Image (cartoon, rainbow, N blue to C red):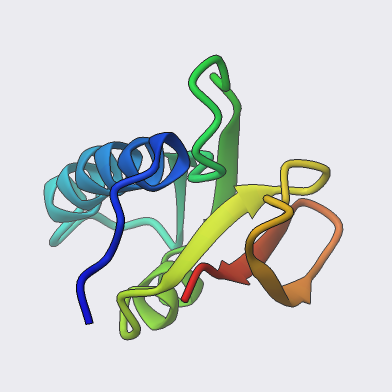
Length: 92
């Protein structure tokens, strides 16, 4: 099945790439948290999300999971979980 590249998908993919670079930059760092860009896909979203590095690592295990700031959950995605700061959504 071929994925249609919608603006939201393109936005999420671009933010994911930036977040992956942040994650790689933290390899070996002595910190349990990291700050990433919201992966909601909205073109004008500049929100950041601070989360445990381990949570970020688990999210990246499935390519359709994205981390978004609470209140930024895309209507086209299924919410997997929420806490007080961020939500994990499945854009499959």
